[in-house]
Length: 273
Picture 1: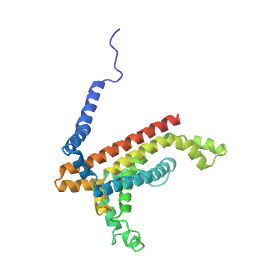
Picture 2: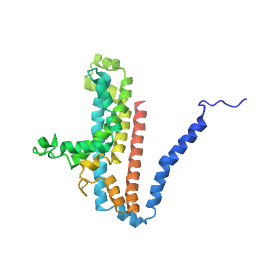
Picture 3: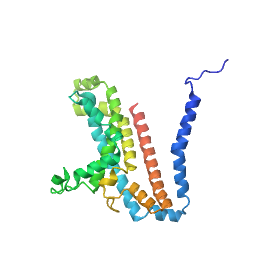
Picture 4: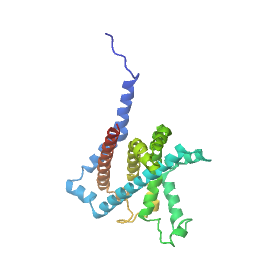
């Protein structure tokens, strides 16, 4: 028998490029981060990465990222639904605007949000007298994280929703199901894996966000200082090992959460089958 033909021509070259890409751009920086942190003893690393200020930054980072990702799941599903199921003037423009946070420097977005919601801003002049403070608060951090994470949910859910035949909903309605029942029993199981994926992407994006948050948060320790900002503060103090220790905590926590979310996504896919 002759040699087997490969299904994918150039598979070896593609695999080599993929491994090289992962090694140079992903694994090598991660290993360098752990190597720098390893210069500290266990007690030194604990003292650097688990101070009261650091714990407050971790709580704020993961808390606001979680809230923003959950909000993005709801908003992203609604926007994807409107873009897929309805026709209206300016639909192409709205569809293009969804990707604006991906093309716009996040620092510009944060600067715009800060200028809008400060006391003398276009919106702040009406909200602040009413007792609604957005700039330099946790609410402002959530808003900018929703802004940067929304495209991930919309672009993940949109193609899945396009593949769902509207006749399935019509069949459910003909059998007496309400719109809510049809969504819960017919659409939601098909959309759940995409929603989980979009949530994971938005959540991971929010954890590492820096540019947009730095302008609107005020960077107040114990109040509005997120972990990436604390890392930069340690770098400005030339405490490189301490900054790396905080980065390692973020890296390990983010990786663990993403693994848990991926396991949940696989479970939902098997449950769907």
